[in-house]
Length: 153
Figure 1 (cartoon, helix red, strand yellow):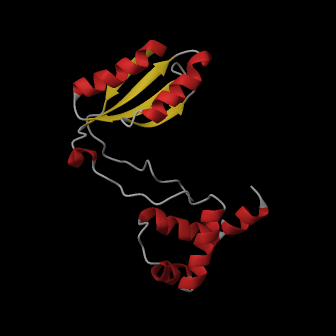
Figure 2 (tube, rainbow, N blue to C red):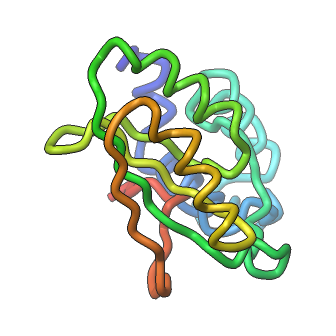
């Protein structure tokens, strides 16, 4: 970590990030009240964190079922290294694959898939299976989802 980034991630910087993670649309003045800075000082810190790549974007969190994507699953793919570039490209190109992780253990990759129904899930798995063995776990419920959160403490 370089000195500029380290300076941005002091106690106050981490508090600013924690507030933005909870609610990205929080007014900067409100953050300032919580961390003891003026709104312009918070704005300057946030801008520097964006420029340094610490803050990579602001996103709306959408309920998949509300937009007809009621089936979520995790697909484990076991393959060999020669297929890695093609798998990464396919995962990036398929909008149904919402995350792709290269992992250790029995599988090579684990991917989160979000689709309308089981035939759509089968189609995605069908696109992956030429690269190796797949194992699919369908999500029954998600009691806790902090997938967009980074622990700051």
